[in-house]
Image (cartoon, rainbow, N blue to C red):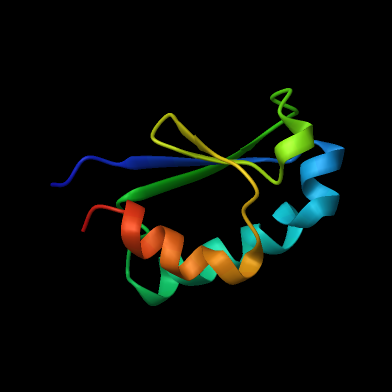
Amino acid sequence: MKPVQTLTLCMGSSCFSKGNNLNAAAIEAFIRENDLTESISMQGCLCEQHCKNGPNITIDGELIQGVQPGMIHDLLAHKIRR
């Protein structure tokens, strides 16, 4: 069994309004479409104090800033172990 990767979306008011509300849906779709429900744990968190550069997503401890919905597919295709 592959180790589970953790993907965390900042859901603080700034990141949420800048696009993480849409990013969450795009990530869920990517996970479903690529049959990754068993290998990715997606969770939300409150503000991580990086609001200025948001919306922020963390993948296995790596903070990725300025993530827009149009970037999700390519970002996850590059960062997610399969």
